[in-house]
Amino acid sequence: MSSLRIHRNISGPDTAEPDVSARSAAGHGCRVCLVRHLAVCTALPAEQAGALEELAGDLQLRAGELLAREGEPRRYVFTVQTGALRRTRTLADGRRLVAGFLMPGDYIGFSNSTHYRHTFEAITDSRLCAVSHDGMRTLCATYHGLEHELMQRACIELDATRDKLMALARMTPPERLAGFLQDMARRRQRQGQDDAVVELPMTRTDIADYLGLTIETVSRCFTKLRGEGLIATPDPHTVQLLDRTRLETLAAAG
Image (cartoon, rainbow, N blue to C red; front, side, top):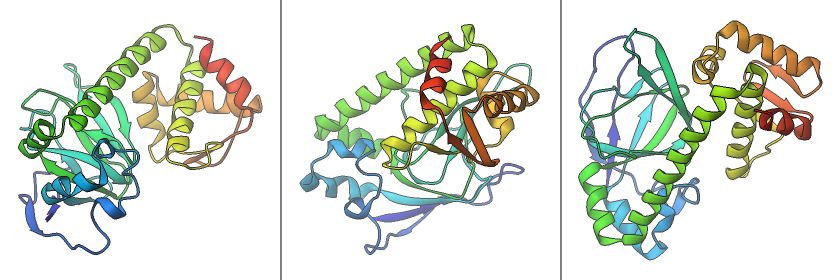
């Protein structure tokens, strides 16, 4: 087993190649993973988890460090264990598109492409489980339940992307924000956390780029939802959902 550490900074080139060293058995591995029930590896029975564990390593990222750049060769697949990452793409005119946010339990690697189609950057200090792309292919060939789980998640992600595109085409800005908050609440619920309080590690600019809005519009939408008693914002990264029924109605209005 190995510990994979990649130190990369968004403002400059890679500072080091992947450094693979011995992975400590204590406090690591599938048996003590806090997100295993959310991750694709849950498709592997406990007695088969050792096969994955032999191939897996830990990857630590500090806030602002890159996991991968758009266009780079895909060598690993990842499961987010702690922290949060943003998935972005640079458009032809130079604008940044935030395609999504990765939270604990999320899997990075749904693609047949040999190169990354997005840039992945840590929003907060994060830890990921990393498995080589070839290693995951071997596991899928051996354990068909794992391959099925990957296909299921790929289909879910594709459906979610289609739903998002359709919703953004017809939703007003407040409806877009309400839908985003509802999605973040559902993520909290899947993690077994209080879904009446939503933690937003990303910036308002990230949210604006994700929703296809300006940061000024996003700020006005937060103000509107607060003024109508739907939410409270004790601090910029915490949102309390005060009226879930009205928030759900607003999100579904589009």
